[in-house]
Length: 289
Ligand SMILES: *[C@@H]1O[C@H](CO)[C@@H](O)[C@H](O)[C@H]1NC(C)=O
Ligand SMILES: *[C@@H]1O[C@H](CO)[C@@H](O)[C@H](O)[C@H]1NC(C)=O
Image (cartoon, rainbow, N blue to C red):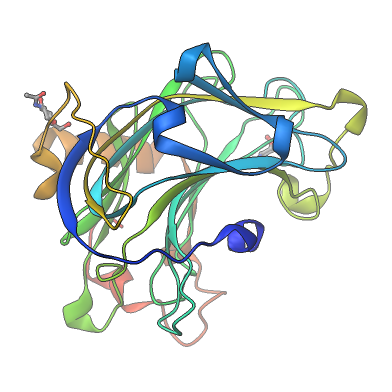
C-alpha cells in the first residue's frame, strides 16, 4: 500500500511543534494527491469522495504532519460489488533518510456483492511491517458512515471502530520491537485497485463495468501534536486530550475481547506457518495486540 503513495511524499522542514486540535474542513486539512477530478471535496468542505475507474484511483493526505494524536474519520465504503477495490485510511511517514518508514494502517478490502469486507490493519516501524490483523465487521460499512480511529501515543497504538477498540499494539521497545515514535506522520486516504491480491486472495477481480467506484469520507478530526511549518492551528470544539495516555480500561478490554473472539479473521500472532523460527517477540508479551 505504501507504493501507491510513495509518489506523493513531500519533505517538510520540521520547525516547531504545537499542540492543536482540529476539525476543519477538508479544504483546510487535506491536499488531493492523485486522481485529479476523481477526488472531490463537497458541501463546502464537509465531505470528500474518492472514486476509482479503469485509469486511476484517487487519494488525499493531510496538510499537517503529526507526532502522536487521535485521528478520527468517518467512512462509507464502496457499495455492492466492491471486489478488487481497496479503500484506505492510514498514517504514514515515507522516510527517505534510511530510517525506514512508519505506517499505521486501516485498509478496507472490497468483496463481491453480499460478501463481507475485510478490515486489514498493520503497523510498520522503521520499515518493518508483518503485523497484520484482519476483521470482518458487525455492520454493513457501505450502508452508513462509521467512525474509524487511529490513536497513537508513546505507549501504544489503538485501532477503534465506532469507538470500540479492535486492536492494541503496545510499545515493546524494551524487548527490541521497533515502535513508531520519532518520525512525524501525515494522515492519508485513498481508493485504488488491487485485484491482484485484495479479494479472496486475488481470485475475484474488479468488475469494471460497475466503475466508477466511490467511497465517502467526512468529519476528519485530529486531536494531535502538529509538527512543522504548515501549522495553522484550528481549534476544535473537541479538544479532548485523553488520547495522550489512553489505554484499555475494563470496558475496553471486554469489548476488544468480543471483537477478537467473534470478528477477527486473521492474526499474524497465530500464524506459525509464516514464522517457522518462532512468533514475533511482541506476540508473547501482550494479551492484546
Ligand atoms: C470475501 O468473502 C469471502 C467469503 O465470505 C471471505 O472469505 C473473505 O474474507 C471476504 N473478504 C475478502 C477481502 O476477500
Ligand atoms: C474524551 O475522550 C475519551 C476517550 O474517547 C472519552 O471517554 C471521554 O468521555 C472524552 N471526554 C470528553 C470531555 O469528551
